[in-house]
Image 1 (tube, helix red, strand yellow):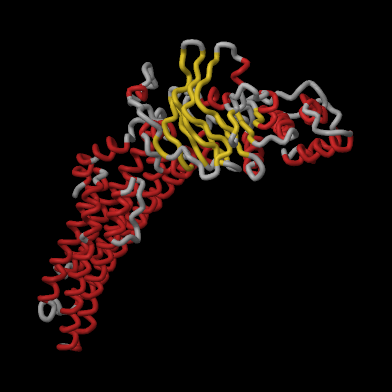
Image 2 (cartoon, rainbow over the protein chains, first blue to last red):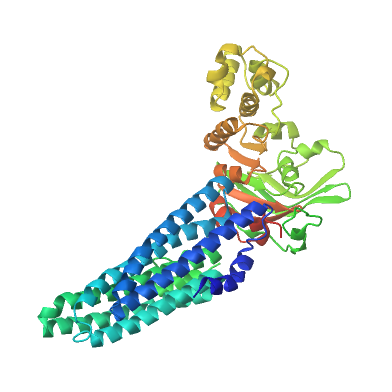
Length: 255
Length: 277
């Protein structure tokens, strides 16, 4: 999703949270700015994950280097947003939905930054993989699986970011419920790679690198779930972290 | 939209049916049920019911003119002094109806004390300010007992160390924050059960405010406190329960932490986050 797409879907964010309804116009602008920055960071991270994965799949060393370098930008954005939120907390003493917005943003950007770190892992593994010929030989099948998992994870991340922009609790809940699918796909790839390692012990190193990439995707899935939990908290004021699906359903039912 | 141009009150468009949240306290010191207050023809309070939890602080918040001070003043019959004011409903202190015919409002006000927005010490010495209530209610037999009451009251109000060497000086010579603590000491001196505070810190600087807030926190160990405040942050800091009033109605009541993190009613949310409609 590009920044432009985000901006188009932002109306939900503003209207559902009534961000433009404060008596203080400056406060409106500040919260608006926080939101814009988070969305920018979100699309940057999404691009990082996408490029990182492609670098692995295509054994593209130059793209991998680009991803590693660009992580500085992600880190800088985390610091910038953190500082901005701290200032708003100090100056405005926000309450209720404004408070929940800032708390959820401060937590969300940690997860986004971690996703950025996972993208860097792709980059590093991509450079090492590009130097061997594992991908053409033993790695073909696992790479297909990795591509499949990657597509799923990135799609989920994109949906989650859109849900964040639109304050869409239903979509967020669906993503949380479906996290187990990503976990299962990760298990499948691991199993496949373990088999490859047993068949061809000389390729263990490379097979492990692909495993780590799959693991990174699985982690990105977990961070995406966290983002969705913050959406639920932000909109509904309900904390669904560390809940089983049954507990989550009960919490959503309760007043 | 962003021009500050609030000609009509958009909040008024929201239809109020009944109070949301929880008005009940497990251990209620005062229980008010269906209180209505009229000033002549005009109704200032509509059907308000709530409990003041014993030994806890309940904050009453709401925009100007929402009736929170009027409501507070009903709790020790301060409104009796206003001829056109009429009150219906059941207002109980423990199990006593405070509007019962045979109940002496002066005695009630000793049990339910009040601290006002502007410090209003009597034009007397610090000592006499505190001793005044004890004297008129005949709480003591001798000078030693009275000294004792004055000292402990000033100590509880956190003022004793600052004034112990000049108890004979006029109370009006103290700083604003000290005067307010003197008024609190004067209230405490008659051993009330409930203390009502009507914006006790709004005329004070931040340090004096912090001292009063700290004092409120200590006082709740012994007394039940209801505080009207315009400062939402103050309500969030000092109270355990918060009641939000709007246009004479109690819109929402609940635990303070809930009200300030996820209020249930749109009106409450708009008020505490500084939104208009």
